[in-house]
Amino acid sequence: MPKLLSPFGFIFCRVAGALLLFWLLSVFVKSERVANKDLLRMAVCGIFGVAGNQLMFFYGLNLTSPINAAIIMTCNPILVLLISALLIREKVTMRKVGGILLGLSGAAGLILYNNPLNMSPSDPIGDLFIFLNASSYAIYLVLVKPLMQKYSPITVIKWVFLFGFFIVIPFGIEDFLAINWNNFTASAWLAFLFVVVCTTFLAYLFNIFGLKELNPSTVSTYIYSQPLIASLVALFLGKDELTWVKVVATIFIFTGVYLVSIKGKRAQLKA
Image (cartoon, rainbow, N blue to C red; front, top):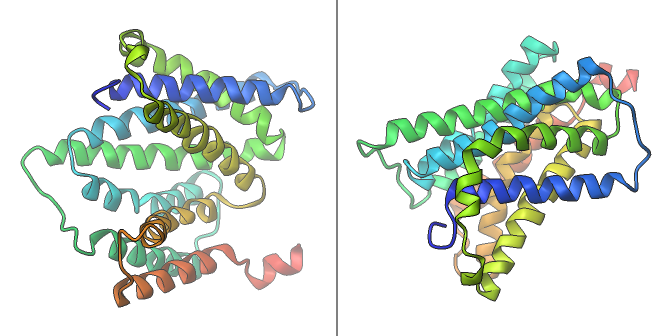
């Protein structure tokens, strides 16, 4: 983007491609009948988890800086914890709060290290849409969790993406039809397929399987591992160097995720 295709055109491709893969995968899974009331919940999940999530992120990123966007996205686990407490009565404990804050500190340290925040006049609107994106995905994680107790992950995600795709169509169809596929080079095709298959299809697939076993707040906390993985890849490729800031941030992230992930003694005894 934007040389070969526009942001909304790319989102159309991402959602359409992942939708096709999910429904192809469902052929190999036992078919399940979905109740009408649950289809309605899946439609809402499609709005927040697929369409709203991706459209607002790309729109916001177009107006603000990547550093601002990355920092704002770290609030997602906090939003998930608050929404979980309100909608599905997930217990808010000091251990979870402490773990989220510790992970947030580590992630923010990695993101901001040598990358100052940018507060240009055009940023506030972009920042707002990134925050709405984080909120939208938080709502999705909480709303989709009860569905995992009744249906298989494949059944849930294929319907969520189908409803999400219908919302994306009016925003991205025009840009999709304007794409000149002849301009795509081999490297562009590889990048395009990586985004559709790996960062959309596989990311949502693994996420929904994680939600089958874990609470939304636990799943969301793993977002703090993204800047850590990015740093590790950069180190492996020789494009970055190891510093004490990164070591401390890594310890914070792993400790924070661990604190949110472990069950209390009462939950362990119950299990």
